[in-house]
Amino acid sequence: AQSVTQLGSHVSVSEGALVLLRCNYSSSVPPYLFWYVQYPNQGLQLLLKYTTGATLVKGINGFEAEFKKSETSFHLTKPSAHMSDAAEYFCAVSDRNFGNEKLTFGTGTRLTIIP
Amino acid sequence: DAGITQSPRHKVTETGTPVTLRCHQTENHRYMYWYRQDPGHGLRLIHYSYGVKDTDKGEVSDGYSVSRSKTEDFLLTLESATSSQTSVYFCAARGPVSSGANVLTFGAGSRLTVL
Image (cartoon, rainbow over all chains, first blue to last red; front, side, top):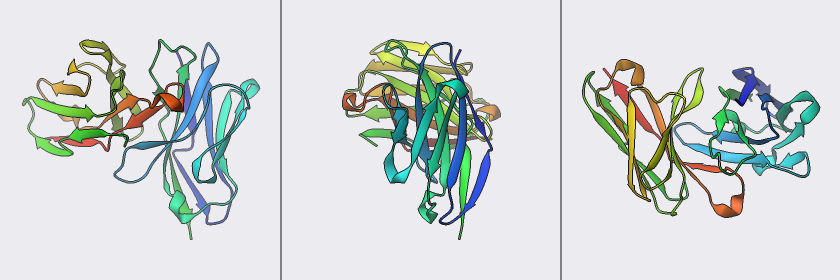
């Protein structure tokens, strides 16, 4: 069974500082990996995804993540935080199997930006 | 939200009453999902559908049933609501095809309170 662990349920950074949100996965087969963002009172939106190819993936709003197989990690980063980045972020994993359409989500990390 | 509408958006009900949440999509997606979101648990899959009248259980399916009589509608029913089912419920659908593997598009959520 696949799973993801997000380290830190709450992260606070100052505006302009580096954002680093951690995600480690467990999967018996090479996974697909995703980061989703949820703004208050809204559904989840896709930030970025890794399926195959380049291990450094760029997403929307200046975010990027790097797939590291040796570390089973898919950490999310942004060089300079903006106030608008305040939200909850979810890492998710699914099998490399188009017959299995289910995503497993982590418990989320709430990001607070300090002015 | 790529044409995914959830109704009702908010509902307060009493223990023991039946509740039905509706998810409607206009994108002709084959796969649809119901998740619940609870603090400290992230999103957990309740049920999913891979076609009309084709459904399967997720990790937290006890106390819930689903139906999909046509492609665009996926209904989640709580036969006899309990306080432990107080949660925010999200519907999701797979697609668009151009976005690649297992990318879910989410509705805005339905907040259910069981008193």
